[in-house]
Length: 400
Image 1 (cartoon, rainbow, N blue to C red):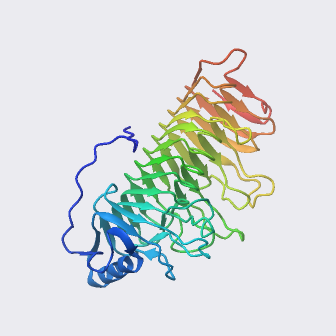
Image 2: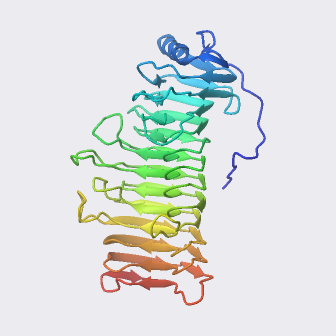
């Protein structure tokens, strides 16, 4: 794995305008940050969509603080900047915004690359008085592609639809999740949450989970299951609140070869469901991750936690089904791996749990299900601690 933080890097030259593209400057956008460019950028996108061309945002800082009726909508167009260090869309939202939305919409057939988005929000609350909103809000049944973008001071990058990919990108100092793969909150053919990939990205200082997979059935329980999410080769550093990685429901979820470090509040990885409307976790593979720390100040947290729906869930009898292989769990501030609630089927193979503050593996009382544990190592235990403590030995059967 190669994990390159944003603090030190070799920055290449600014990119040149690609062929067959329309420049936002031609349509009145100001790269010198002296006047608003919102309408000019949208006009360029609309023209490019009609003409079958792409959009070019040259080197510069573009102020986007116009209270137009809709956020910037890039759907169906390829939009390129000169590079994330060179092209910045900067929001200076008039406060209070009166529910005005400053997100950037990405829909079917959209490709966005090589730019920075700074939302300049001052606290969390999408569309609220602090000016916070999503950085990228992606959806669409026809797929989308995002490469080499940098988002700052946003709520989250909200990623839905079918067949979307975001890679080689970064986010910092967010108020919500860094990158959230989801299926929306209600039935919508453009927000199914199918086969979305988040790969080779960097998140630092997120205000919620750094990387999350979130499957919600909605208040009526009719929203379909999220399927096929992939979270691959990403780096999560110092999330302020919540977890480094989170899997909250879904089917055929893959979380592979990620690095988590310096989690202050929750777990390095949390596996289970989201609230009472969250879909169960039908199947997930967690492999090759390096998970450092976990077990912070926000309640009783651990290095990795596995849980299941509660009795008030729309799915009170559903099991959480997960396989963890070849992961390193190091330096948890409580148990290295913690299993609680009721129904869990867990396969653990060839994992290393190193130096947890309490137990290596802890199964609380009241858990039902099975655990297939083979080839795992628990080492560098503190005095008086045990490798595995199963307080549900009669109902949660471990085979080794």
